Image (tube, rainbow, N blue to C red; front, side, top):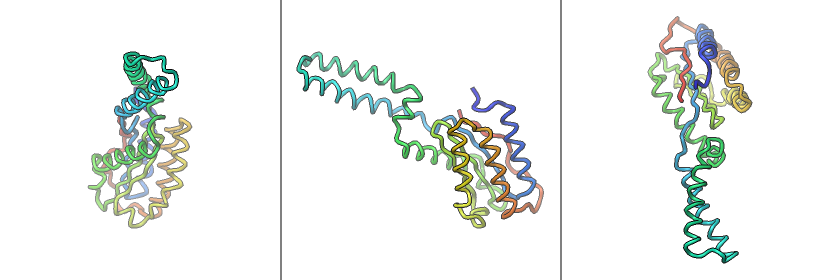
Length: 205
């Protein structure tokens, strides 16, 4: 299932097109369902709990035999592996710092994969969102970072992050693009008409 409908994706593309009429910046938007599947997390937690919980019960109660203890550990491991694979639980088990680190890495990979570092004047702008991690980041190339301090984007990112957390991803994209457009039009105004990169929203399932 698409993260945004085709109609909603067109709204994002139209917002980008309007902004790029006033600036030399090239905007690309990327929306990822999640930055990682975190397949190792359920295994890690299930292993730890399977070792600890039956062992504690064995120590406190003493009613488990050695054979029963091993069986309890195996059953605990299998059940927890299945339960912890539920997406909501998996995200909850992953430390926030790890989630944001993985999302940030994906954003940087997308900056390169979308060829934002090859634009004329080095004016590429990536607006990246990872929904599962509730993570938003704006990355800009040297042609823009030399004119605009990174802190200029902080308020825009905070607003967008809050909208993603509230399930308002589409509105967040439009608001973010328009806010970026105001800054870019003032600091990187249009000098010639061009459109080097597609305006479409890139979806990562």
